[in-house]
Image (tube, rainbow, N blue to C red):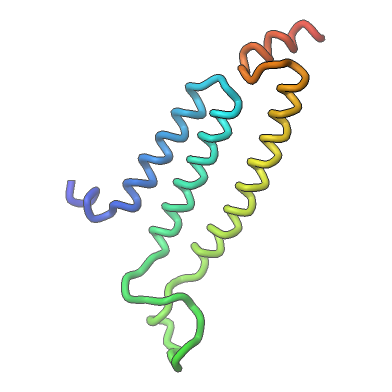
Length: 122
């Protein structure tokens, strides 16, 4: 129980990821699935930032004459998070555009109804 309390960012990331995956798997509405995917992305970003944080250290920007590596945090998790955010926003935009096209064609956002309607087209 103590590790859950001391690692509250990791615990929050796991809870958010669980909420996102349940939303992705349970709901049939495509917009809700995209929201679930966004929640999962945010959970992964929170986890990466929480793992990369070291108390008492600063960003790796040389300032005030500090050149020792023990003074800085590792910049790799921050770079991964920034790259992931760009990919996540792009993926969300493409998914929403495809969802809009599906809605215009089939008149619904229910994935089961779209699947049944599409079965009659083949």
